[in-house]
Image (cartoon, rainbow, N blue to C red; front, side, top):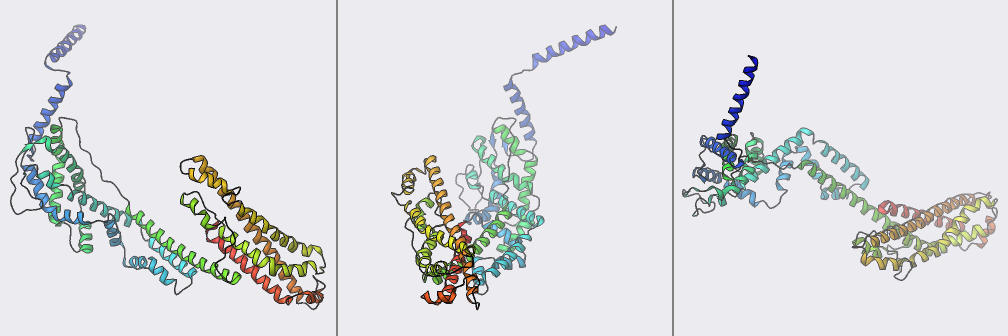
Length: 515
C-alpha cells in the first residue's frame, strides 16, 4: 500500500511539472515583463502620482517647482560663494570658544612678528608653542564630531539647493523663466525617457537630505554667523519630510525601474565625507611653525651678519668662484640638489686668507718656532692643527677649481644637466656628484673648526702661562717679547677672540639648515 502511494505521488509531481511547463516560460524577456507589470501595479498604489504609461505626470514638476521656489534664495547664496573653503572656516570658527578665538589671533603671523619686536625670539617661540598646543588640545573628539556633522549638513544642503531645478522644469513648460515665480506655470506631461538622468541626479542630492532628521544646529550656525538662515527652517523641514516619505515608499526607484525597463534597478547615493577639522588644525600648525621658523632664520641671519662684520668688517664675503649658492641655482630649479655648504666654506676660505695667514701666522711663528716649550707634547696639538689649516688652503682652491665648467667635476655636471629631467641615469650621476661634493665641503668645514678649537685651547693655556711671573709651559717669554711686532698679550687675545667668533659663525651656519 505504501508503495502504491509513493507511485501516485511521483505521477502527481510529473503531471504538475508538465502542466506548469505548458503555461510558463523560461524566457528571460518574459520574466522581465512580468516583473515590470508587477512594478507598475505597485507604483499605481503609491500616493505620489508622478508616472503613468511611460509618461511623467504634472504632479511631479509641480512638486519640484514648489521646492525650486523655496530653495531659490539659498541656490543664489551658494552659487555666489567663490571660495570653496569659506564654509569650512565658518563652521570651525563658529565652534571656537572666546578663549580659542583670542589664542588664534595671537598665532597669526602678524601677531608673532609684532611680539618678536618686544621680547627675545626664544621667548616668543616658547610662548607661541605653548599657545599652539593649548589651541590644538581643545579639539576633543566630541567637538570634532559636532563640527564635521554640521559641515556635512551644509554640503548636503548645498548639493540639493544647487541642483538644476530650472533645467528640469523647463522640460515640462518651455515658457518657464528662471527664478521668476509671479505666474503659475503650465506643466504638461512628457515622455519619461527625457528625465531619466535628471531623476537619477535628483536622487543623489535628495537621498542625503532625507537621511538627516535634525537640521537645527546648522540653521542656528547660519543665523548666528550670517544673520539669517539660507532657507526658512520650517519650510526646509517640510521639504525634507516630503523627500523622506517619497524615498521611503521607493516611488522614484519604481519609476526608474519602469523608465529604464530594468526591474532590478536600484538607486544608490553617497555623501563624500571630508574631515575638515584635521585639515584646519594642520594649516594652523604649519602656518605657526613656518612663522617661527622664519623668525628663527631671520635671527640666525642677523647673528651671522653680525659675526661676519666682527670678523671681516663686512657681510659681503666672497672667496670661492664655483662652489657658490649662485652656481647651484640651476640644479635647485630641477630638484637635483644644491651646494649645501657654500656659505661656510666660503667664509672659511676668507678666514684662511685674511686671518690665519696673517695674524694667526704671526702668533704661531712666534710661540711655535721661537718659543722654548717644556715639552714638545704640549706644542704638538697646536702645531699639527696649524699646519693642517695651512695645507687646506691649497686643497680648497683645488676643490673649487674642479667645479669650473671645464674642471674635472664641472664638465660632468655641465654634460649631464640638460639630460637630467628625462634621463634617470644622468639625474643619478648629478645626484651622486652633488652628494660627494657636499661631503667634501662639509669635511673641510668640520676639520677646520676642530683644528681652530684645538689652537684656541692652546692659546688660552699659553696666555695664562704668559701672565705668570715665570713661564711653566714656555720658558722664554721675555725673549719672545723682544721679537714680537705687537704686544704678545694683545696679539694672543685678539687671535683667540677671532677664532672664537669664527667657530661661533660655523656653528650658526650649520645650525641654520646646512645639515
